[in-house]
Image (cartoon, rainbow, N blue to C red; front, side):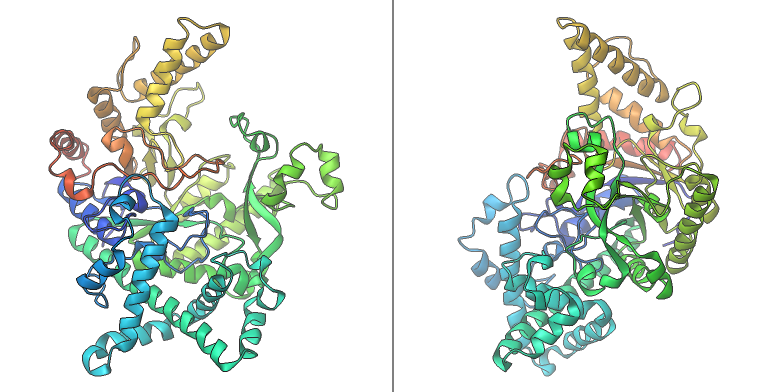
Length: 578
């Protein structure tokens, strides 16, 4: 697919888990994505953005994957046509009595969904092993070719997953027996086991290879399908990986195990005392950039190659981390311990260290130049792997002055969130002034949807009528924010105004009329709903589990949505994004 900033794109952000497919088993899968591609193409949308689809751990966060390469098994479509090793009768037999209809209602019920898909994949694997070369030679050959081609990451991952099963599904390798805490020692441990025990572990490894082969085959196929439909798929690479991942376990030499990545204190998070005081401690290990350089950046090159096998282009979440990242000298498990401490008390427990930017603060011109040079060096390598206009940089937060000019030099599009882009007089930067090489959106997966934000402003304004001074201050702030956004979109809000279809369309038109290469609407914003997919810093079962009410296959038959999308198609054509 030819992708260039010369061709403006109208995009849609939709977390895969949130989609309801015709035959899904309680979570969005490749089949649901194929249905979304069909629907998007019919609406004139030319790009679909997803969140990361790598395999997650027990927190189910797509930004905390247990492998930088392995795909999440629950994304595998399990139907007789999509998974040739299972018949309709076998699928019905395995799902009988599981409460499947209940799994399909409401949010994703991860433990039950994962267990059900695991049983189905295990049955498929059993059938696959029973196949003969005469009846299934082509597929067996493709499986073996996949295992050979992907051995560099697949072998370590397969052993890691087999050992996870040994420990109740826990990825926390630091809690495993000492002999299993690295790939090297685990292989030595396995070699010392009895033949029967060794065969059992090796069989589980074969199962994990098989599951990944299925996943990669399906994702490669859906990419080709989207290509034929003229819809570009945008993937997502988080800057870091889970500390308890197969990568850190297998390649400890490229990670700094003593520091955790995050971001500095943010005073807007008054309800989160740790974030307000110390910042966000994500727990991701920092990289040993010198070690990666010595290996010609092989780990990062592989990561880019693999995401490109599934997607036409991809976003790097927190691209700022390549330049410098905020590091904590303690892991998140100790956050509660450090919360009440003064800086002096904290230093006493960390050998004199406090959280700071690594490798350098941006406190001197020399440090700024060094940080900029590091980021440019690494990103140049990644661009060599993916090609021009395939890499998108999420450059939000506290952005050093040198980052965006560097991205522009490299031809990497950054993000423009309208209410965060302001002029010297405080007014929002007009969309017509956005650089062509940019991506604009009102909301990412971490944001409140537009409807919720708008209704929140109106609620604060209304509350001031009967409240005290604090509600008056909140009202004044809400008026400033809502009127600034409305002015940016070219209309006025003289009084309390509900979130009507007219407001919705004016905001959509303004975003799509900007000069940005890509204008992306989160699916909840497109539909005008208030569902939220993630609340940053919150530990909650509602994060990463909310699903859209209606299946994708039913959208075309929804009269209200059909009417709304007819107007959206007109906006896409009128703004030159068709």
